[in-house]
Structure formats: structure tokens, C-alpha cells
Length: 259
Image (cartoon, rainbow, N blue to C red; front, side):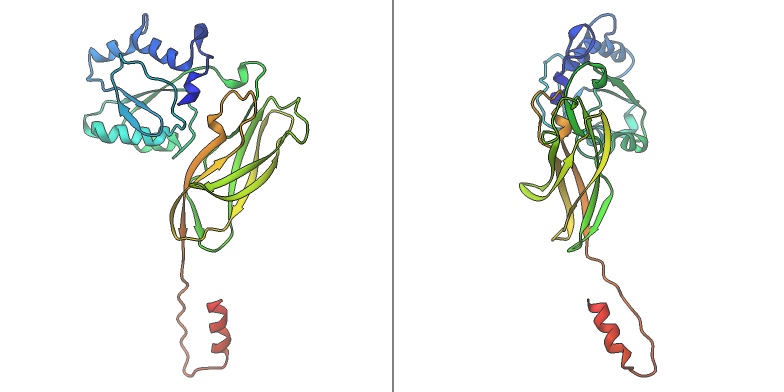
């Protein structure tokens, strides 16, 4: 994704250039070394993997990164029984889908992760706000208020006025805005929890998106947006009442249950 274009790898390379250097150049030549003993298939990915020729340059232009989904789909395409392992070259900026660590644990094949780029916090002065985690395994009841807990992070806001640090966290389903939550970011670097509420109107599996505005001069824009899914259900309560005769209380009980 676009975060692979950040120039914070060794010798002034971008993260994507560092990946190419690791795969093809001396002294690493990772692809050639693997190909001596293994059949290697090469994939690039944003949200889904695309099989590619490693000698054809790719651009860091995809707008989202779903490492978990990419791992799952690549394993399915190759075939789990024939797969010795997965070598994952990534900067770890995951902006959509399932938690990659959880996906990797259930894949059934080894995953060797190679980190690219430096830690953002070690780059000196920079500005960044982001959604630090993706909500998952959420289940709500239709026509009832739903609360989503979100972890936000921030860095480099010391010089911002109070009004500049007050931003809206927005929740979307497709192009429809479901809710806004005003957030006051602190001056100090760190992370904090906020809540955003909405009322789902339809039963089903819904793909939702959390969005923060992009500040001028932000280092990484991709973490200002996170996609996730929720399950909305309409549970029914079934009650068995056993009585010898119909009592007057039945009328009141029925009203309560219907409400």
C-alpha cells in the first residue's frame, strides 16, 4: 500500500525499495536462495494478493492493506498441503480486515515475517494520528444502540492548539455516514480509547469504515481509515408458560414480552 513508499529504510530507500533490495540484490538475494530448494510463487497485495513477476516493478499505490486476508487467499491459491511456508515482507501497517496475527496462527503453515522500514516514532519530528486497532468479532442487535470501542494514536501534536486537536471520528457504511464522534486528541504522544455509537437498521453482515481526517504533514495517511465487519441480528425471546387456567397476569406478561 501507500505506506510502503515512506523513505525510512536503510541507505535512504523507501520501504518498497528495501523489499526489492532484499529479494534481488547482493548480499541477500532472497528469491534466488529460496528457489534453489523450493518452488517460489510471488504475490503482491493491498487488500487481496495478486500473483506477479518479481522482475516487474510495482508501485506503492494501493489505498488499503489487509495482511490477514492476503495471507488466507495466498495459502488457498497455492494449496496448503504443498506449502512449506510464507515469507511476508511488509511494514506491518494493517488497515483492513482480520488481525494478521490471529490469521497466521490458524493457517497451518509457517509464516516468516520480515519487517521493512523504521519505527515511525524513531524518525524525529513528524505528525501522525491514526486508528491503532481494528474492531473485530462485533455482534449487534437491530434497532438497538451499538457501541464500538476504538483505540486511537497520535504523535507530534505538541504545537497544535486545542481547536486543531479536536477532530471528528466518522463511521460509514459504504457512502452513508452513520455517526460522528468528536475527539479531543492530547498534546502528548500516545494512545487512548474512544467510543462511537450508532443504531443498525438492518439485519446482516455489514462492512463499516472508521475515518479520521488527514492532518497537513501527516507521515502515514493509511492508518486514518479502518474497515471492519459487524454482524447485526434480530434475536427472538421464546417463552413457555404453563398454567392450569389463564390468569389475569397473562395480559401484563404478554405486553412486557411484546415490548
